[in-house]
Image (cartoon, rainbow, N blue to C red; front, side, top):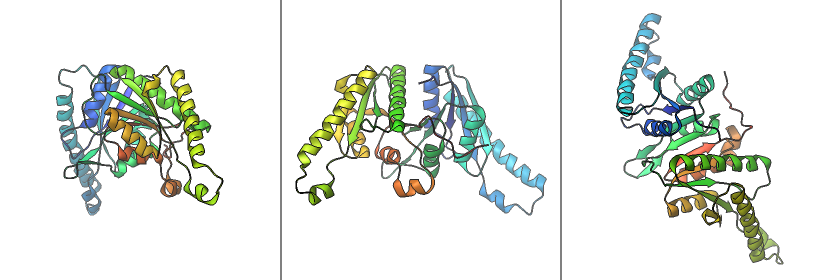
Length: 310
């Protein structure tokens, strides 16, 4: 995986604590990357000012931008106190935050987007906004969703792979995910854990075909995935003892392993479906991300085409 050189930290306008900025600065300190604190704002009362002159409307818009720029400047200054990090800030006026983030990435060649998630105070769970899901599906570069916790050295990292598949896209994604896990493990002086799930016996086959032996079927599938995992781990010089192959849904298996080893970061590949296919089929990566209580890095395949363009 190539080294990060430009990181875009997406600022939450409703919070004084910017998890994305803190994580981006930590990464920049370890990689030498530059960081841009990026804030997308829009005041919908602006839509009600059509009776004003063009100059008056522009004055109102600029006043909001200036106010938010001053607010962000203070946050950036506090976050970079005594830290040698190349950090810039940018405030843009846009009524669709995810689009403004993606356009900024496309225009200025960022190689990582970092965004904080929101915590539901009473339920103690993470809330994903529409912006989060749009970025996961449409960002042309990896997206790091920060759920909290301070990264420490020697934390556990999970590379979620789909080892059993012979599909070229999945094989390529497995390689990218594992390479990214090794990269972060080097940065954090951590260990990489490979996690793979496989489906159990289809119930309808077991019922409809009397001679079908579900025990033999499960054993064969498990051995196939186990052997493939051993080969994958050996290819990247990873410990076999840190390879997990379990029956079940990806979101359940990855969540369970992440809880068992107290993982700090899970890296997963996502094909980034959009539109009707995403609605009808669903994205496995999104189900996994929703089930986790740690940071998640989502990576796209090499042939991914961003649905937004200039």
